[in-house]
Length: 352
Image 1: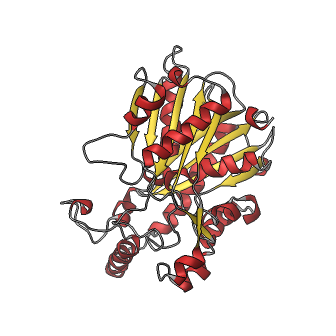
Image 2: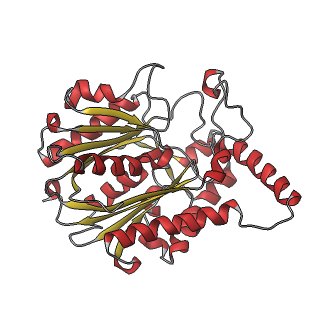
Image 3: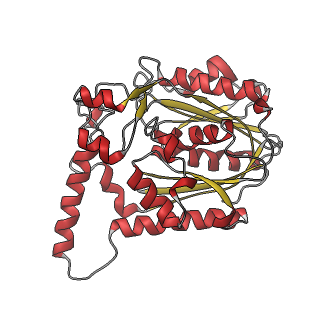
């Protein structure tokens, strides 16, 4: 989607202290061979700080940085990937009570690790639909320190870190502009992230842990059997996913009016080096040095917050400046491929 008058007024991050991966290996929580292969050095761990409280802290930082009043928000989009609190309760209202007030439409969005992309697309469209609407707040937050997930060994190619991020999107000019945002789904990969487990009753209600290693192995075994049985050839799921990621990026670049050569940096999800280098940067024909891998390996995969936390890092370290274009890209269950292009218009006010 080519966005119209969608500006980034501010970003905010809550990133807790990190725990060294070497400690996790010594404790038997993370396999040593996995640590060597993945290349992660640390994981952000929030302890007992609830995810909604983390989101509140990130959002407060965002508003303090830009000087805008939180009660001026017209839309609150709260995205997450893991349990936020008691069942039957919705976390977005925690932010309404403690920050933005009751005047905004507040919605929890569940789009896996690409939740921020869908929230940006929905937020931009919501603001453009009515001239009276001026501001949308996008937040993402997760704390994976619960009994039903082993953050150190939850799936192939990643370790799970805790974080919250916030972005204030507005129609009034800001320090950056959201030029485009897109998502494409490969529905034939829907089973990948649930394979081998029943749809009902939901695993969390029976004490079933979230184990993407087991699900991936189940899916691959089934896919291999199907491949041996079929008589006609065709592209594998992974080839299709690769093609659709490139298609999403090409669409976002085209709608932003730029080319790959115009990009200053790329913020992909915080997966292991092989995934970042081969599935994203190599596929785009770009060097790993243009990615945020060196930062991401120090904090782990932060759910849907990877790209916004990386954007904040690039801004605060001076690695992005006025005139630069940054590509955000990600993959999530579905299988969904998402991308967005942001242009930095000026130095963020809190860095002046």
